[in-house]
Amino acid sequence: GWAFETSLDVEWAHAIAPDANIVLMTSPVSETEGVQGMPEFLYLEKYAVNHNLGKIVSQSWGATEETLFNPGGRQILNQFNDFYRQATTGENVTFFASAGDSGASNVDINGNIYPFPTVIFPASSPYVTAVGGTSLFASTSGNYQSETVWDEVAAGAGATGGGISHYFKEPAYQQKNLPASDQKLLNGNRGLPDVAWNADPLTPILVYISFIPGGAGYYFIGGTSEGSPQWAGITADIDQLAGRPLGFLNPAIYAIGNSSDYSESFHDITVGNNSYNGVTGYNATPGWDPATGWGSPKTTTFATELIERIHG
Image (cartoon, rainbow, N blue to C red; front, side, top):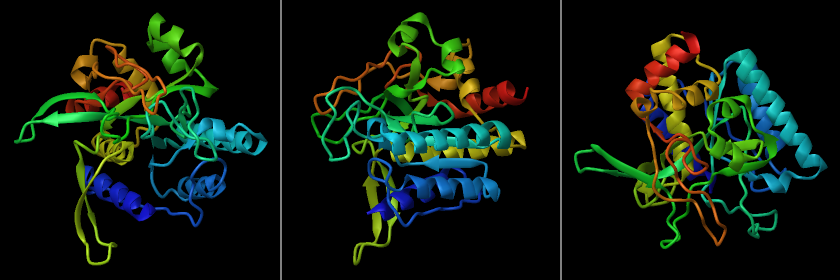
């Protein structure tokens, strides 16, 4: 079950930031769709912040927004978002969340696919940095070649989440930094993801798994769940470089995207879309788009630009 997920999160956050302290928080109630599990998750995240267990939170879980459009769901949405706002602005905490693995299609509480584009929470929160997915191509020596939107329709291997929130309004950093064409698409609502990372299980990473009886070893894995902990690791490295926690990243990320420093800080993904399960998604375009955000980081330059824009 979720043991594979937690192994991925810990191992790849550590691989990117080997000197960082990692606190793994697990809940006795799993989150699938709807409110189930979310109060326990909120309790855990509040505990982590209140007890200063860390300044970077990676979240590889998500629920379709529409499954929370009832009184109990809206209450927990608002409680989470109020917590994110307070923790980012008051405590300098950075939150990441995976954008999902089913493209623009997501399921209802009974597992049926909504017939229109949807997104997942907490990636849709305007106070969270949402991480979308790409297919990453590199040389045999590990040199970067290219990326496309992760959308393995033919192979049935998933696609990156991304799209437009049906609950949260467009935040100021998107209003200020996205062009008229994006504004028309967003129509006053929050767009996601903000950034991207390799997620295609056909361009996979390795995870060491020891809990399978008689089968301990390395296994391939994909999904946007690998992007959130790796972005958390990158941010831990940048926090170390800056000598202090960066906190909320999105305003600075969008300022970089809407500047002459963009091409030096990001790989702009312009090929592909995240249509999946018969639901029409969104095309990759130059600059920001609701499939891969601003793209994946050119980390050395991105790090210095991020520090300069947040701390001067």
